[in-house]
Each structure stands twice: as C-alpha cells, then as structure tokens.
View 1 (cartoon, rainbow, N blue to C red):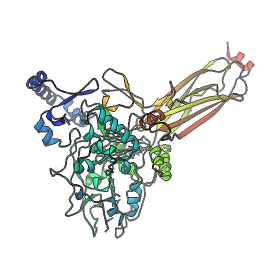
View 2: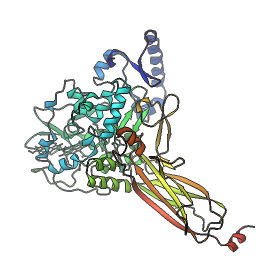
View 3: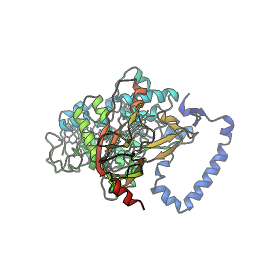
View 4: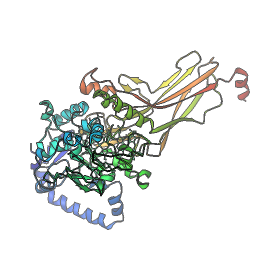
Length: 496
Ligand code: HEC
Ligand code: HEC
Ligand code: HEC
Ligand code: HEC
Ligand code: HEC
C-alpha cells in the first residue's frame, strides 16, 4: 500500500487506511477542528501550547495527499531537503575529511552515531517494525538512523536483508543541516552544497583551503540535536523518546548548558580542550570533540572499542549519587525495618536514564547480609535476563491501545504507562522493608549498587538470538553501611 495515497491509523496494532465512509466525514471533521483551533488561539493556553510541552504536537501528519507530498517528502518523518532531489554524490565521504580533521574523524568513527545504521540491535528491531507495518515505518526510522540513505539512496528495510551498507549519522549529515522545521522526528533540512563545499560550523572566522565554511548558530545549540533526540509516534503522537524536551525543561537550559557542552568534550567534567581542529586550522581555546559519549557501553564492546566503552562507563558514573537516608542506630532481631535509599541525578542534563525507552534501565541492587549469611534480603537481582520483580528501577514503561505493556514492538505503542526516571537535578527515594531474622547477632551490612544497562539481556536474546551479545551491566555507584544488632538487654530496654 502506498503511504501517500491515504492516511493511516494505527488500529489494534495494524495500519489501516481510513474507510470511504470516514473520508466523507472529513469536511465535518475539518470544520470541528478549525473551530477548536479558533478557540485555542483565543485562549491564554495558546501561549503555553507554543512554548511548553506541547510544542512537538505541531502537525507532522498532514491531512491531504498534496500536503504530504509538499511538506513531508519523506513522510512519516519530517525530514526535508531544500526541494532538490538529492543524490549520493552530493555528499562527501568521511574519509575525505579525515585527511585534515584526523582527530575528529577518529573520535567520530567510534561513536554510536557512526554506527547508527550498522547497529545490530537497530537492524533487528527495524526489520521487525518494517515487516509488522508493511514498510510504513521505513522512512521514519531511516530518517534518523541514515539521513543520507533516506534522502539520496531511496533506502528501505530490504537493504538490511541485502546487507547494503548505508552511511550512519556522519560528518556530511551534521555539517550540511542548514535549518530545522521542528523539534522531533527528523525535522532537519538537509541541504548539501557540493559545488562550493560549504560546511556549517561554530566559527565566524574559520577558513579552509578545501571547503567554504559558514557560521551556524544552530550548531552551537541543543536545538540542533533536538530533531533526532525527540521521537514521537508518527501516527498517534505518543512521546517515545524525549531527551531534548527533558533538557529544555531543565535548569541546564536556563543556565545555557547545551548538549554539546557535555557530549562534545573529551570526557565528563573536562570542559577545556584547547588545540586545532584541522591541520592548517587556527589554534583555539576549545575544540568540540566528536566522541558523542552516552551510556551505551554494550554497543561499543560489540564493535570492539573497549576505550569507548570505558568512556561510556565514566559518563554513567558521573551521572548519579546514591546514599542511605535516616538509617537507624541499630537493628532489632525479629523486627521489621525500613531502609531508605536516595538516588540523585547530578550529572545528566536530562532524565536518568534518557533515550531509547524499550531498553534503558537504571536500578538499585540492594543486598543485606549478616556476619555469617551472605544474603538475608535482596532486591534488584537479574533473573532470567530481566531485573527481578519488585526491583526499584528508573525506567519508562510503554503501553498499547489496550493498556498492555509493550516492551519491544514500539510501533504498537499508544501511551506511556509509567515513567519513574529521575529528573535532571532531581532525586528519587526508594525503600525496602524486611525482617531481621530472630537470633541474629553482630552486625548487619547493607549494600546498594546503582546499575545501568542499555537493554535487558532478554530483549537482546530475543532480537539477536541467545549468546550473540552479552549486555554490559555498569556499576554507576554504590554505598554500604554496617549497623550493629541491638543486644538482648538493649532490645528489652527499648520496648516499654
Ligand atoms: C584540506 C584540509 C581539509 C579538508 C579535506 C576538510 N577540512 Fe574542514 N576545515 C579545514 C580547516 C583548515 C578548517 C578551519 C579550522 C579552524 O579555523 O579552526 C576547517 C573547518 C571545518 C569546519 C568548521 C567550520 C566553522 O565554520 O566553524 C567544519 C564543520 C569542517 N571543516 C568540516 C569538514 C568536513 C565535513 C570535511 C569532509 C567532507 C572537511 N571539513 C574536510 C580543513 C579541511
Ligand atoms: C549536564 C551534562 C549533560 C547535558 C547538558 C546533556 N547530557 Fe546527555 N548525558 C549526560 C550524562 C552524564 C549521560 C549518561 C547518563 C545517562 O545515560 O543518562 C548522558 C546520556 C545521554 C544519552 C544516552 C542515554 C542512554 O541512557 O543511553 C543520550 C542519547 C544523550 N545523553 C543525549 C543528550 C542530548 C541530545 C542532550 C541535549 C538535549 C544532552 N544529552 C544533554 C550528560 C548530559
Ligand atoms: C551529530 C552531528 C555531528 C557529526 C556526525 C559531526 N559533527 Fe562536527 N560538529 C558538530 C557540532 C554540533 C559542532 C559544533 C559544536 C559547538 O560549537 O557547540 C561541530 C564542530 C565541528 C568542527 C569545529 C570544531 C571546533 O570546536 O573548532 C569541525 C572541524 C567538525 N565539526 C568536523 C567534523 C568532521 C570532520 C566530522 C566527521 C568525521 C564531524 N564533524 C561529524 C556536529 C557533528
Ligand atoms: C540526524 C540525526 C541525529 C542528530 C542530528 C543527532 N543525533 Fe545523536 N544519535 C542519533 C542516533 C540515530 C543515535 C543512536 C545510534 C544507535 O545506537 O544506533 C544517536 C546516538 C547518540 C548518542 C549515544 C547514546 C548512547 O546511548 O550511548 C549521543 C550521546 C548522542 N547521539 C548525542 C547527540 C548530540 C549531543 C547531538 C547534537 C550535537 C546529536 N546527538 C545529534 C541521531 C542523531
Ligand atoms: C527522531 C529520530 C529517530 C527515529 C525516527 C528513530 N530513532 Fe531509533 N534512535 C534514535 C536515537 C537518538 C537513539 C539513541 C537514544 C539513546 O541512546 O538512548 C535511538 C536508538 C535506537 C535503538 C537502540 C540502539 C542501541 O544500540 O542502543 C534502536 C533499536 C532503535 N533506535 C530503533 C529504531 C527503530 C526500529 C525506529 C523506527 C521504528 C527508530 N529507531 C526510529 C533516533 C531515532
């Protein structure tokens, strides 16, 4: 079925064209819609709707075939070019840039964005999504995972089966983005200028013997990243990934700290990186580096980049703190005790964790031991490839139209069932209630470890097959405390 011949709705996990009777109702529907838009324009809510959390709901699903062809040539993604049909020869290979920007090339080459098409987890899920929706989502996924493939190579999911290599998010994608038309679903304008080789970048005074340069304020701000780091369900508008919005609503935005300030430095806390970005380049106070380190150490290990995996772990360790709060002075055998653990997001400029919601999970692995027993209470172990039931975790849970949990088939998503992730600069307190076994003596040791994984092992096994990829569980931070067991006399004294 051709996506442009009709509008599709997601009904019970299937994409169906609107029935003819329904089409006859469109004029009425349009009238009612116009009326509501009129009311909204009049209300003070309008201001909020423009600047606040509803901004991504600007229509990216036009109503008529003409509107679709005109405004969204790569529907259902929002990507546009400057109107031209792009061809692969309009983009240069990163190898060309390597000649002069060797350091930046080496950093980018090992980044997750360089692997955005080759990523085995992406390919497996994309194939599933494409099959389940009869190819309806192809453009949608490819717009972010291979912008050049989509705009100039007519890419489709079939290219995964034929093992066609497509470029990921590379130099020519980012440095040929001339503007944006929104803040989600690939609303970038990709406009390469091969004749003049114009590269857009952060300097007003850059000059290169090979290409023209053009100053772009957009490249210095988070809005540049927003088009790909906000993912909205294209047919029902459910917010799936919201990294940009999470940042936009945070204090980091108010303080002017952009994505680039944390993700384009050599590592967490290293804000100064003086040097040159190219041979023949100017000496500068700060060079924005291109590792784009995030949390996904597993992907780096898959591609055999242990140093990048270590950078990811460092990033994760910089993100959070963990502590016990209000601990009792001693514990009483036979009695129930409640232990509180506070986890704070001190380093991530968005929720912790952020991004890919089907997978990203941070959780507390809590264990209680005595002098002789290694564990009298545990919560947060990995059982059968998942965190065990009852684990205190920080995660989004997505649901389908019937309110059932969707853990993988993201195209079926219709709503967010819960979101326990920690706000930027925010914290979360979790607690555990358990009994101290009768007859315990000596000390009780409490241990809480904060873990991260990009996806549960079970999901990887389901997508790639068992034993294909071992998920790296990262220990972000931990805390322990030893509490004395009150002796019998103290116990009696404490009970009136
Ligand atoms: C012959 C050497 C050479 C090659 C090849 C080259 N560049 Fe450059 N590039 C430079 C120099 C020199 C500068 C100026 C650096 C400075 O002033 O700090 C520069 C600057 C830039 C800037 C910053 C522009 C600005 O306004 O801030 C970008 C972006 C850029 N190059 C991208 C690329 C890309 C993408 C490629 C590959 C398609 C590439 N370059 C290939 C030499 C080169
Ligand atoms: C104050 C520093 C800071 C800012 C600002 C910031 N980040 Fe992050 N980001 C981090 C840290 C630390 C992590 C690792 C912890 C985590 O995964 O949340 C991270 C993780 C990520 C991840 C990986 C998520 C995961 O769990 O796999 C992505 C993607 C990301 N950031 C994108 C962005 C984008 C896009 C922006 C701007 C809209 C941004 N970040 C702003 C610090 C920052
Ligand atoms: C995900 C998008 C993205 C990719 C991929 C990317 N860049 Fe950049 N690059 C940027 C942004 C954004 C900046 C400006 C950061 C700022 O100033 O805040 C930048 C800055 C630069 C600069 C100027 C650095 C400085 O601080 O003086 C050069 C040169 C450059 N990029 C070259 C390249 C080359 C070469 C590649 C490929 C090997 C590449 N970029 C890949 C987004 C990207
Ligand atoms: C054209 C789309 C696009 C743009 C623009 C873009 N990204 Fe990405 N980014 C992606 C995709 C797709 C991935 C996921 C790749 C994968 O794992 O398969 C990604 C991954 C990342 C990761 C790694 C996450 C992890 O889990 O480790 C970070 C960090 C990141 N991007 C930061 C940025 C920042 C900062 C900017 C802006 C300067 C930016 N991105 C702009 C598409 C984009
Ligand atoms: C608007 C841009 C955008 C669209 C559309 C998009 N993605 Fe992504 N995708 C991203 C970004 C950004 C990340 C990285 C987020 C993070 O690190 O947590 C990502 C991460 C992923 C990951 C996790 C990869 C890993 O190794 O951790 C998978 C799988 C994935 N996407 C599949 C898909 C599929 C399938 C579709 C289409 C149904 C799709 N994406 C559509 C931007 C997009």
